[in-house]
Image 1 (cartoon, rainbow over the protein chains, first blue to last red):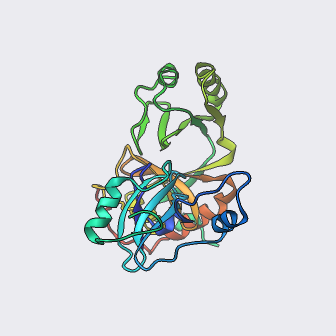
Image 2: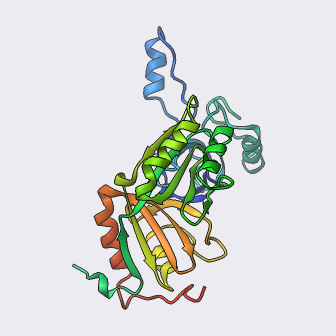
Image 3: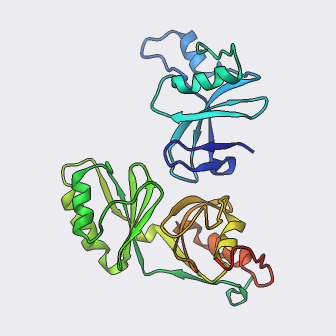
Amino acid sequence: MLIFQCPYCGIDADETELSPGGEAHLKRFGPGASDEDFESYLFMRENPKGVHFERWRHSNGCGKWFHAARCTMTLEVFGTYSAQTFEPPQEIKDKISQKRPGWSWRNFS
Amino acid sequence: MFDASTTYVSLEQDTSLGMITLRADLASDKLKKAINEIGLGDLPAQRQIVSSSELSLGWMSPDELMLFCASQNVADIVQTIADHLAGEHSLVVDVSDARAHFVLKGAHIREVIAKLAPVDLDPTQFDVGELRRTRFGQIAAAFWFSDQTTAHIICFRSVAAYMHEQLIRAAASGSEMGIWSEA
């Protein structure tokens, strides 16, 4: 079972207290964007075996959205971080690099 | 149907508890003043609940508190706090009728809650003074202990019947596990 520490209330919440919110760091392109950009925002998703970034909501708890970095293969959790960010904090990236040298995910590495 | 008279902790639904939800910037001076005005000291820290003889104030999330008081005092307290917070981005709402409040009493309250919620109820992990939002079975709820043998559980009024039913089942006589009972 996945256990994430909610960065807002500090509780080690198991999966049953959380709701999944899909892939993290999606960018919605503004008015006048091309059809390709809109399609990629709507449909194009990563499906990695390994390092992955997701959004989760502490729905049966403080109710806040947050980000999580984990490994889809081993279910190892690298860390959780605030929802108010466009990319993973350096500290999380460093942790992943320590355990999965050479990792990359979309344009992060 | 199960009968509440056959449970090994006492269980009752209490309708006399007033609940006020308070959303604001918790670092705000105006909010601190308002809380002092109604007779409480410091705001609760993360996941804590502070109490005076008549009031309790629990931390619900980084921008939300829940105030518990006698139901006849709700209107006055809402008015007092709202007046203090005038001009600030905030919300003070009486939610007493939207919530249900259950009180469990007995030596075995920890294990009854542990049967329903994914929370470590060991006395070293959860104790008096803490408020935990979680789920009970399939519904969202929050609970705290006012002393070692009294637990308070709140949930939405719309699912109160489900909560009552599952508490009765979890506390059914004969299903004692005998852990944490001497705490």
